[in-house]
Image 1 (tube, rainbow over the protein chains, first blue to last red):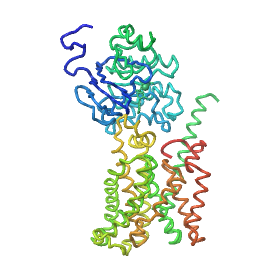
Image 2 (image 1 turned 90 degrees about the vertical axis):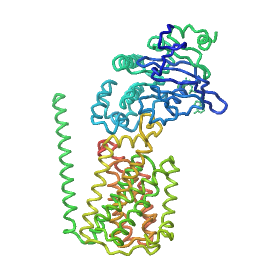
Image 3 (image 1 turned 60 degrees about the vertical axis):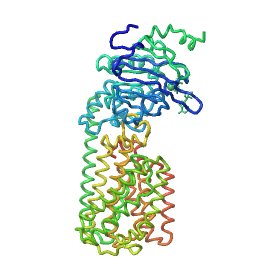
Image 4 (image 1 turned 120 degrees about the horizontal axis):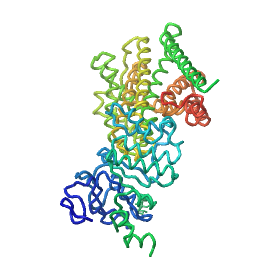
Length: 250
Length: 326
Ligand SMILES: Nc1ncnc2c1ncn2[C@@H]1O[C@H](COP(=O)(O)OP(=O)(O)OP(=O)(O)O)[C@@H](O)[C@H]1O
Ligand SMILES: [Mg+2]
């Protein structure tokens, strides 16, 4: 990797120019070390992938970033500001949105209401904004349906656009492409690319599907047993010895 | 008939239905306004009670129906409102409408303060905590520190400040205002946030909802209407003492009404309150001794037959549209 003037020796942008930085985070559950001294940085406007076998700590890392879990050691910075001790709602309001590995919409509320839950109370045109987002998600026709009645794919789209309702500009997506059909997968990826290219949104996505990771990410990070074992371009990570060993047991 | 014709017909039908609803609403309101001139004072006092119950039930619903936090201490706020207005009107000579309004304000402040502590408790802990507060309230009201304010166990034997007719219209107005505010809440994004808390509080936090703040707001609004309606109710009763102010029966009534009519719906509390007013009145006159038991039996039956309540039942059958405005 080229080391230019504003990057340090690890290739990290200097002076807090990374939109999100996790520094030496450790998270333990009893004797289990779910995250062990993990440091990562996410560049603005890029799609960063997070891979690793089951139980590697991917979801735990998301939970630490979004304040669901408090890190035992280490810090999280968002746009150069320490957000380690903030509550989840405060972190969301700063601009970090997330989706959940197990979909977390409000099933007994309508699709439109689901978006309104995330509206800023001071926003005047929340209704119009919600409709625009539903258009983006292809859910306008379903706006008055109960969210619990949607297909899995539609629910994932709903969960994804809901975080746009409060103008999150960093989006942490935990397995968006899992459990949905190939057509919906393509549409989801297209939406992610559009948001990235046109609106400058930053994505940090957990994904098991290697094709998705290799074909769509600018950078990939690999976790194993709570430790970062590799990071770099998809190619680099794919050819990394440790990654190959973890994934193919060689 | 082609498709667009059918659609137009359906639209027309919808508007027709709407018009019908408006017509019925106007007739009901006109009837309620004219009622004191038509029926006996006794029946008027029953309808007065009905208005109070509607306000109570809808106030309880604003907190528990919308946020899912079960408030077993409703009477705490009714009691605070009743006492505050009695103290202000009788001991301090405050003009009665202002006194009543301040009864609501004090109850609301009470909810704000208690809520700041209690709403950090989740689920059943909150419910139990509120029940404990209810049990503590009459004891507190008779402590020596508060006796100068509350007149201890003796309470207030006060003369009703205004005529029955004014009381009747005041209660009417308060019940209408409570339902209107509940309507405004449940169709707004504030209401959506409350429902989100009911559905999944942790998930709600992750999309930027300050759940503690929204819960406390709902609690304060609920407390305001509880206190306001209670001010009028106790004025009508013509007395307030610790056991009536923090009575277990008036604590349970709104809960029963809401469960019967449809929890979390806008009109469920109204339907429940209307039914329970007449059920209570009927049993009270027919079975004065066993009236609590008879009410209990009816409630158990209805809740068994209609889990979720009447409005919810109609909605799930498609007889009523599934809109928040109903
Ligand atoms: N709340 C918790 N309490 C105790 N242990 C937990 C908790 N959350 C996660 N863990 C443990 O931490 C480790 C990492 O879990 P995590 O969910 O982060 O893995 P993951 O990489 O997301 O895996 P998957 O691909 O299966 O989603 C696992 O061993 C898991 O059992
Ligand atoms: Mg996971």
